[in-house]
Image 1: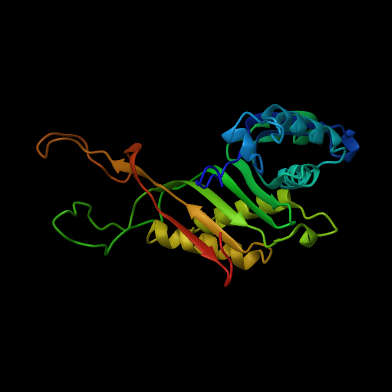
Image 2: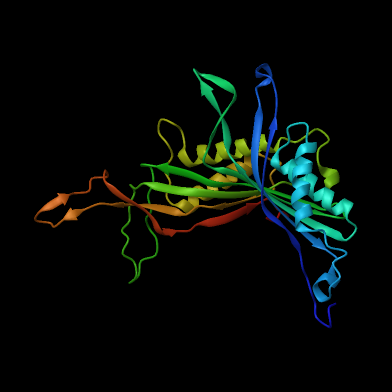
Amino acid sequence: MAENFQLQGRHGKSRVRVSRVWRRPAAAGGDVIVEWNVAVSIVSDCLPSYTSSDNSAIVATDSIKNTVYVKAKECTEVVSMEEFAVILGRHFTSLYPQVSEATVTIVERPWERVAVDGKPHSHGFKVGVEKHSTEVIVKKSGSLLINSGIQGYSLLKTTQSGFEGFVTDRYRLLPDTRERIVATEVTAWWRYPFEHVSQLPSKPFCFTQRYQDVKKVLAETFFGPADVGVYSPSVQNTLYLMAKEVLTRFPDISSIQLRMPNLHFLPVNLGSKETPLVKFADDVYLPTDEPHGTIEATLSRPMSKL
C-alpha cells in the first residue's frame, strides 16, 4: 500500500542490442552469429523509490543493460534466444531478493548464412526478412512461460483463392469471386508447454529448429502442393488449417495465435466502356495495404491458454 493507494510498478531496459559470435572451424559448420534486440522488465519490491527518495532497492536499468552483455559473454556454447531469455529471467529472479518476476522479450535480426558456388560459407551472412521473436516470463517461484513467434512472414498466391457467400446487405459492394490473389503478412505466436523451470528438458530443446519447423509448416499449408496448390475459400479457413497443422505436427506446442491481414491486389480497369485503356483479365493489379482486412485467431489444446 502507498498512502492508502494500490501501487503496482515495474521497470527495466528496452532496445538493448547485442550480437554474439561463436567461432567454429569450417569443418564444424563455420561461425555462428546472432543479433538480438532485448527488452527486460522486472517486478521489484521497491515501493519507497516511488513514494520517497529511497532508491536502495532499485536495480538500475543500466545494470540490467550491462547484465545482458555479461550473460551473452558467459554463453560459451551456442544458445537459442529462448534459452538466453530464460537465463536472463532466472538471473534477475534469483540474484535479487526484491525481484519477484522478470519478463524478457527478444527480437532477432535474421542473419542467414550465404552460399558461394553452392557451398555454405564459413563466415559469410546476409540479412533475411521475417524475424524470430520470443517472450519469456520467469517468476521467483520458478514458474515459467515461453512464447515464440514470427514477425513479417509475407506469403502470396496468384490463384487458388476466392471469397463468396458472405453477408449481403445495403453496405456490400464486393462481388463473389473464386479467382483472386491472396496475400498476407503473418504474425504468429505459439506457446510451449513448460510451466516451471524444472520442466525444461535436461537435453537441450532446440527452440531454433522448432521455429524453422513451424515456419515451414505454415508456408506448406498456405500454398499446398507445389504442382496444384490448394484452394482457399477465405483467409479465415486458411488461417485455421495453418494453426491446426502446427498443433497436429508438434505436440510440444500447446497453443498458437495467428494474425493474417488480407493485403489487397485490386483489379485494374482503366477507361470507359466505350474506350477501355486497360481491361482486367486476371493480370494487372493495384497492390495496396491501406486499408486492409484483419483476421486473427488462437487455436489451443484443451486446458491451454495463450
